[in-house]
Length: 176
Ligand SMILES: [Zn+2]
Ligand SMILES: [Zn+2]
Image (cartoon, rainbow, N blue to C red):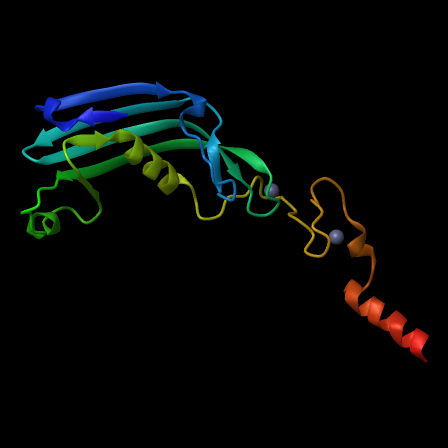
């Protein structure tokens, strides 16, 4: 989703629906696994000189991994954002940047191209909470055998103490 910054004279409005497979997450160790529905994108780009203000909203749903049981589940994505993009020229100093609202995300445009895809991906990541849990009652994985306790209780619980200790006890008994 590249936009030629030179074609944005005053204001431009980008309304798009991105297909579910638009974002291919290759690193499967990640918390976010991709979209679970097409993503509705609505971004207004306003320009003032070499500065661009992006005012946008994303509506859809993500497939994310549960922190407790590691199973994927659907998380609603509903986020609004303001991002400042500044065209960077080699002669620029940082003074202008400091004058901007601190609450805003400030990015730089390299060359003449605004990469909306990059902005969208970043905002998607920002919208996801630090911890994602499939449901409040998620029991997670057994720390001993790794079984998903939402599916069925494992046998570790019925034994008293850690299995390593009971093994040790057996060795002791045999040695006596
Ligand atoms: Zn879970
Ligand atoms: Zn277990």
